[in-house]
Image 1: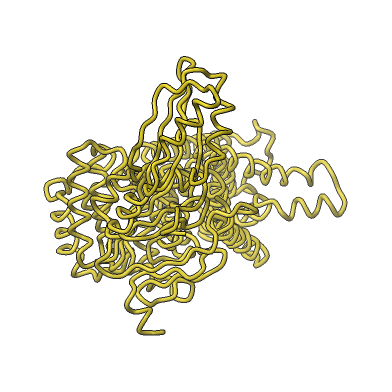
Image 2: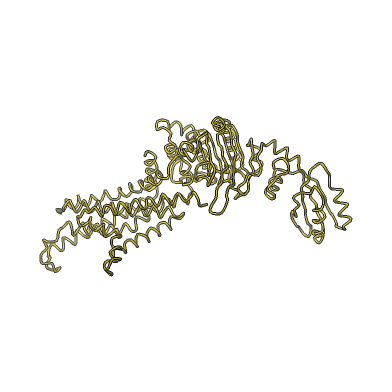
Length: 327
Length: 258
């Protein structure tokens, strides 16, 4: 067991978190190894921030255990926290401090030896592109620069685990690109966990994805695994012109075997869009058209589309399950 | 301990980074200076012609008692306004700016965070109290005579009263995200404690006795009269550490509140 724990940089064992009666996390277990960049994906309020706060040692879980590089967070919080760098969702830094002054303050708190602080802080600043900004007031920095200071702050004391809560929100496209490159470079010899609700970011950065909603991990897998899952599902969009037919159309579609997650997507100017998922093995379109003609429902459009990561994600959120592969 | 000092020095630094800390210091020295000058002038006026003020035997009134006794009770009222402003930023501001969140993820104990913040504020308070000794030098220079005992006890009492108030202020600051609410709340609590001192004048019986015993001012008065009582020391020590303890409990609530 000791060997297993030391091989994973971060390990969660049946972690739950309750705020009063509200379950923010339910029985979550996973582990992340060195060199992995894991993406946490979920809508707002899914429990991403709660999970990150537990990982960062901000508060302890209600039950379950957290190991950081083999150290039990509840038994030896100081040692565990030293191995963690955390970038919170809203990068909040003391506006009345200068960049250099602030990073020195952080280095002292994280226990960097006094004679190393100078060189250590310098190297983090140049890594994050802050070499010339040491004497600027944090309160006067732009959002992008503040994000860099936040990242530099997380890197102080060379943590083996980096926890980044929505690191690219609120940045302009150039800044997003820069931050992503920094994260990619950092992920090579560390364990990185980042949360995001930007789906393309996940496929760009992460070696593994965890989808989380209502405090539970719905799916977890590598990006290729998720991609193969995409090929596995497809959607059919139907447009009917007469709104009065909607009820009957839904009833007919519901009766067809192989139709999953049937939804009325939107109603525009009397036209109704209905979408549902199906497996690509069978083409249901002829069957649907035949049934609609029999029922006298006027169909103006029928279209077969491949599911995107977004569709899978939305489907997951709705049903809490994902087809065969990740159930 | 090194980490406590790191937090304390940042806290102290933030007092001087903002115009608020400097303004507080300037106002404190200005108003306490005015108190001092008025007391010295009025004393010298009375001493010229005590009979005119209905005092037949002026030698019975000591300079120390008249000037420094009144001085210390005057500046203690200033604490009611100073302490809320000094402590309002400690936790409330950090909660509002959400900088506290990061502090909790560093390898620090809650105790080190609270102790560091309180120490930083106490250092600022020391920077306000110590220069008051300059008044002694001025008083000596203009030819005044004073007893060292009551004056130094007066300083000690003022320090204890201030630290007790500050501890309460830091606790109230840890309850809210708004510095303004923190300041108003602290002011309210301090005024209530202040009023405890009056209960003895308007009522009697065991309850009145309990209230007046709880009043920080009653204990402070002993110091300004030159009386050093262990009871007063215990009272202020308890007051200080009780609110320190409450502050620790209060920041622990992050563990179960969203």
